[in-house]
Image 1: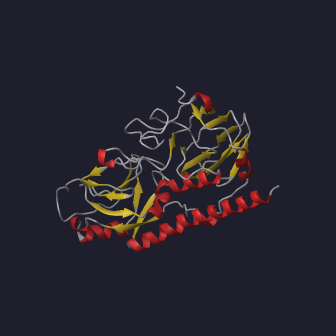
Image 2: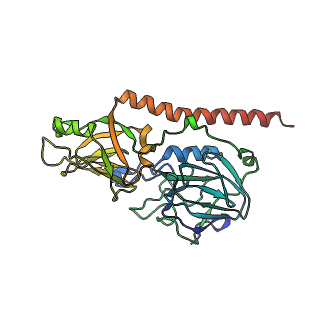
Length: 333
């Protein structure tokens, strides 16, 4: 089914392993039990959007491990960020974190995973699937949002507005490597401890911060299940359910922590030992089953400083870019 037949522009030739439409999420409905969803690595999606001249929250594609093959039926500009899945435009390799011009009839494909797990594609004007509760994100558990509430499949068509002429000039724009998240295999993730530290034994907390955990195969967009030395409690039983944030680290009775992510439930009763800082969410989003993790405690002030540095560099770069483009446009006769 085509949600917007007037602007059919992208044809899905092959869907890839797992490709969904995502934006920055569906905020304001957790009180009704509706999850946020949105991009797992929202920094990468935001950067891709800025590169092609979109608003930060425009919808793009989240591509996992093996990217799709897409045909553009109108010219556009595009950018790919996040994981390196070996993108190829018209059969030629193209770099990530760069804006490219794609002529009408061209095909974007991916050779395979080189680094990371999740790549993001933004196109000029954004993916125009209908918004639902203020978001175009696919919420897989609820089977709504995105394109019919599901991952893409072959022969799908994605609506995109026609390319505005001025956006052609963005081709060649590059987001500097020094300002990108420090993606790495087997990262150490910074967390703010608590708020239920009194549920855990002193030994349990020491284990959490001093030992290595492995990402296990059941991990998905809802949460990453870890395996390692069990975290011991000093209190039994569960809590009255409480709200859950992106990056919350719960510890169920078996002592094996779970990191809750984009498609997390809205409330839960397992005690929370810590919460990942927002600046490190791109790092966990690029981890795959089998990868190793460690945790490092930081203060809320340190978490805030790290967030402002990562996102501040993104917004400063693009504010300067837009200022330079405006000056250039003003000088043209």
